[in-house]
Length: 442
Image (tube, rainbow, N blue to C red; front, side, top):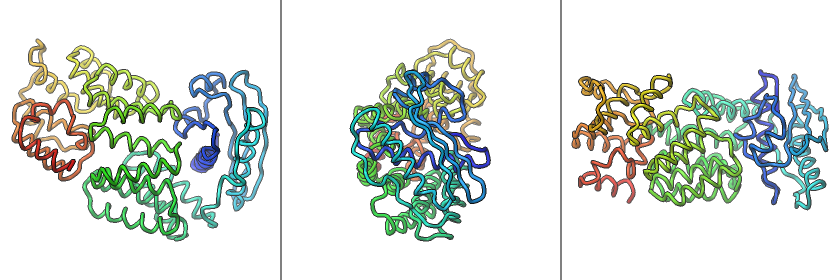
């Protein structure tokens, strides 16, 4: 659905609510938010969209909001020939937005049943989560920022969600939004105060809604990323998926958990399952690439990386992972060209030096005289621990183990995968490394 730029958050929120509502209709395949939004505001032939998403029908439309009025225009279109087999305009007061979302969702499900076969449709697909429109508007703004998935977006979302619960303390969803944001912000910097805030927000949210799949996803995120509690994380990811099997964020979290503990076959099964309903999500292809990388299948990892970058060329996670894969496949020419042509590459100088250290037999002219300075000057803030990799391949294993132990204590990002990180192989024979494995994965 399209919208006025100023109200994009509102249009996105309404669209996501309708997607979530339709996923509750058993037997109806509904493409997830990320892939659906890939075509937002783009003039692309519906047949092309159908081919890329693997669907026979698309819902398109627009949302317009002005003061206390909202107009939503929707139409169902066949991807075979572009036929419009249903369309309707809805004009309502903003205070009726939840009834309108429910009405639209029921109309869509009924039209699909009429044209494609029997579906069991509940009497209602959407229940009003709040009666306060100001709070709901703030929630949609917070959700819009939240889904930026970056530090600034998370910070903005926290401020908006906090305003939301201050206005309506009985509204559960912003508590779960806060719980997720505090869990991620706390896990990035090992901030126990933020992790405690996440616990508190979860407690308040579950008092209001004990069966929220978003709540269990937030609880799983806190357990897995914030606390490295794999058993609880697994339990809560499974609970979120059981409540909403189409919620790909939760299934991706489960996939990442299986990856961290080395259950690659299970992780790949879930990665492939996610891509069936979210086939244009660059983050899911990165997740699948990361599994292959940790399992030392660099050819498959690079294939997934290329797909991810074809969807979003500025996605820094697959860019950094491609650098590591090119080091490990001993392809300096490709690596050097990629670093030269990619402004978003992570630590290009360190990357070239690491290539030389990992592949000393290659006759390439790389100045490694600054490597000690690189290690000292590294201030972090990257996806992968370049400082650690350099220490390992300079054979400074005790220093590397000190670094690893400190980052495990701090539960730093991708260090969670240290059991199978290929560039840490030289450390695996050390008793300290084995002790760290026992401590982290006991």
